[in-house]
Length: 136
Image (cartoon, rainbow, N blue to C red; front, side, top):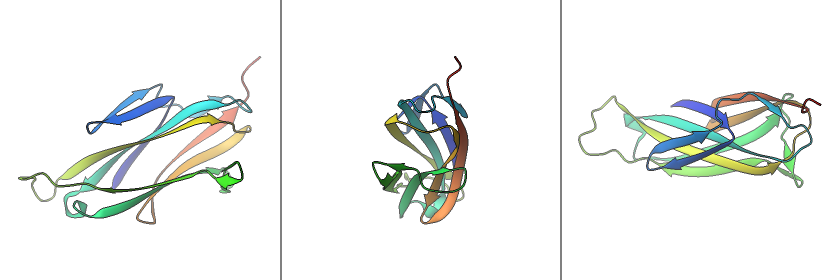
């Protein structure tokens, strides 16, 4: 599956579309400060993988690959999805499935991080970013 991940200030997935505000950043000037942030994903599901249940797993790791913990628990979100194939969809085509994960009040130290998305246990996409202090 082809996946596009986008870091944003806020996003919503409504009626098969992504609505994104403040999207496309890779530097967060908020070290040690709580922020609201979103990860938006657009997954192109191949025709032959529709009408099947799939597992999504999104996790935040440090630049060293260690799990980021919030309240002693890894910041990990898991979902399942099954995308139906509308009648008349031609074999070989793909269908888009939008997903959004909103994380409110996230506090991160300065450093490098990456959101990693796995589909059915296989790495599918990643989006790295840096957290830095706000300029004085």
